[in-house]
Image 1 (cartoon, one colour):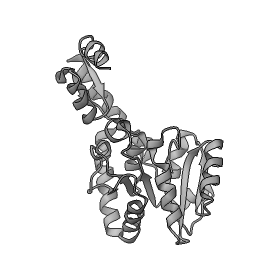
Image 2: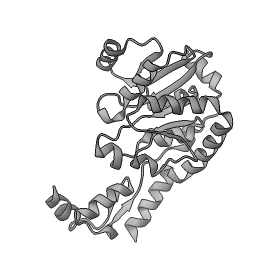
Image 3: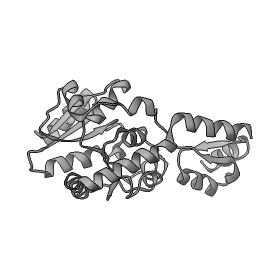
Length: 246
């Protein structure tokens, strides 16, 4: 592995683009010249994800209940354990309030069967993978969007730059996210509520904070929508182009 980084990346490449600052730091430790490395996180298509649709209309379109507090996750389930889906399901299991509905979007048939056998939860709705063009409507239907990545793997804690993170930020819905280094490069206490990674108890606590404090939510959403302007695909492409030609 060391030879790969020093020979293939360190010597042969003039420019190296990575998703996180932490990834850059680790490459430097392997001997790659830091001057070649440029941090370029993933991004979002703002036009696609800033839609003028009310929460009520989104729920009507998706046939989701109006009278529930919907906690939503979108993306991969068990393809990568560090996605933290089990942490979210354990949180759902521990909540005895009937008001909450956990909507998880992106499960395959095997994952649905596995989750139903393990949890048998009545407050969880498992939905299959959806066309990406429909995800903005799902996000609009939620009261809280969750990013429950664990810190059990370096890919999660140091190297990931989840697309859903930026899509969540653009949606105008408050974010509840794991407090891990890779996520903290984008989110902090000004634009999200962060919770201890791997802790369903901490997730529930953060969830209840968001649900009970409308003033906090307004501030977080406003800041997230301002911050995500720095993470558009258009802006990312421009920065990469400038680095390549200079």
